[in-house]
Image (cartoon, rainbow, N blue to C red; front, side):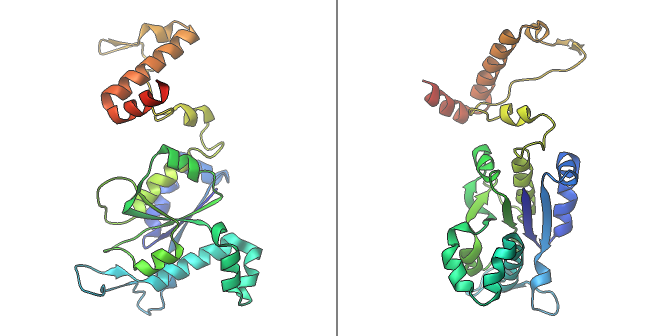
Length: 253
């Protein structure tokens, strides 16, 4: 699976994602992560990518041209030989014929649908995902209308840019790519499986600061252990995420 991040701060993205599990996945060729510097595509000799918004207002706005050209460069690499028609001057014909087949472009914005595990599962089926990271007061609406397929938020708060949300999403999606986790069962049974939070877990020593590991986990009785874990998942979800609990309850009544 390939992730393409359009950003003004490529080093932030690459340093954050080429470590730990994702770093190993990149080394093994299970995923690819590229950070595309939008400034490399500006026609301004000073590498300027922003300007004042029409109508006034606070702050600056990222301009359409460098964002669009950065996107087109990635789109051409994804398309490969299939893009030769466009290079021969048949851009409009190709766009109309393949409009539904263009790569998913995710714009990270508080105005988008809130990211969740189900969305991660859906996006993990794609071969290529493009993440567009805004800055300043946002991006010229015209280029968003032209290239964006998905508007996504990671929560109801405002950050300084889209890089951190993109990294959060890439981490969550990558975990669902086969073989990225050493134990693929982990991805299936972690929190939010069937709308339930994960059960509590314990490791050695058997007793720590007077707290003992629940006896059922020491019993070796796998059916009892599974029943206990499910009970704990239901209990924890009800206590900590009543919204998820009600959703699970409605499905299982």
